[in-house]
Image (cartoon, rainbow over all chains, first blue to last red; front, side):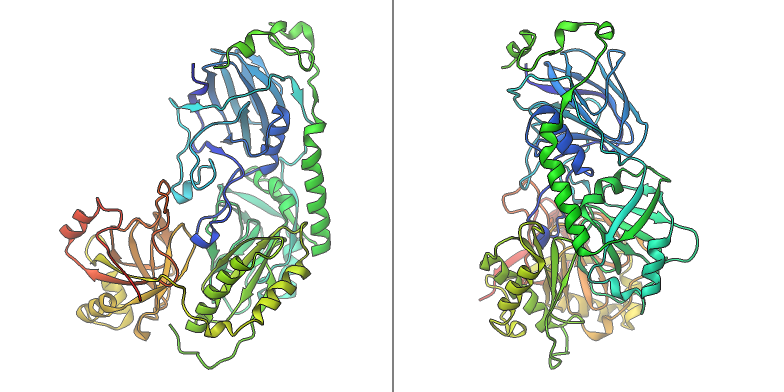
Length: 340
Length: 248
């Protein structure tokens, strides 16, 4: 039988996402890709596959899913309540989803975006070099109830692994560096920006996040008469009402509103995972500090495959002990025989 | 485009995020600065500078994306500075292979409800406004904001009308909108602060095609007035009934 994930119920706005598509900025198409790129890498590490493997991005809540054939799965990003045929599963871990079993993923307990990964990755159509849906551009579609999302071949069998959680699901400090338009805001305004307590507006999506604060807005010198220039993910633009708006990977490619600064790439996962109403403050950092943070992030991503450890289970709570792989390399034989 | 031909402008190189720089050729929209941006972006593509991953022209700038751990900002800046010194980019010719495209367009009515108010804002009668907009041969200055979406200009000075204070909630794909002597043709349904003066049946972005982007910077476009039934018939054609001619 074709390997696929059957979708019985799913949150609105769920999409298949990989690392997005680069090389199309000159044509007006932004990179897009998983909102939380770290979560994509974590899922790949848990399943022992490439970080480019496509996963299902679940904004705020999940759904009810079933497999047409046994699938390895991993759950990462914003933790959600999840059960397999009624038994609670660990988040930030890999599991076996037997054919016909019901995987039920509920609402987030913190954060914003959860990810359901499958061994072999989702095998949806590649358009312009990537599988990511880019709804703002009209590329691809949301995953909806009734879909059978195709899954690629999976040579591996290991499940029951976990990763330490990188805590990033409740807002916090985002490091921000100056960009080419920062100086259209005077020094006092920039200083105040770094001292202000913001909270994430309820209105947020894959394109951007509006940030609210008490007190005055953040206005550019000389108003808004600026030519449209290229946007990079993390740019913070300030619209006419003085409220900052953090632009993400699926934003428009150019913008004519002035940008006060840019959140460093290492802090974008924390930014997108901030829940509605979550607190955010900005910390101005130098380019040198931003480079150190980038090196640390790359080193962290590079060590993820080695950081996976067996999930500690209480055997008494495992209903069907034989369906789990207990020792690396040894499996219940029927799993591989299901491969086409 | 514009008139500020004489003002010399030394190109600026400024950081844009951790892995980007912006090379800017003017402090306002001008024809030489736009040509410089288009030519310099193509030159950066050809140069194959180590660590540079992508470049994209906007109206008067070129954004260059690089791997910030693979190459230093200083090294990228030096390489771009060397390239800037190779020629007078403001005097560069327009891109090769440009086309002249005549696009059937309905002006005004239900399909383009802000034609009348735009004419009034420009101080032009309806007839004069129709003549101005439909006879203008405008050029694609950049593609951006949304996939395949062109900024076209420049229109006569009377059309230097401001953006609206409030956004229009949505204009459809193929909408022709206007502000500040420029036209934008929408590639996807989006909100806008520009005024909706015309409607075309052109599909600018075709994600399932081998050639997904219809227009390129440097292409010239004329929006030819047609009746509504002509436009409706053209909707089955992704080119929206457009006639395409190579500029020689």
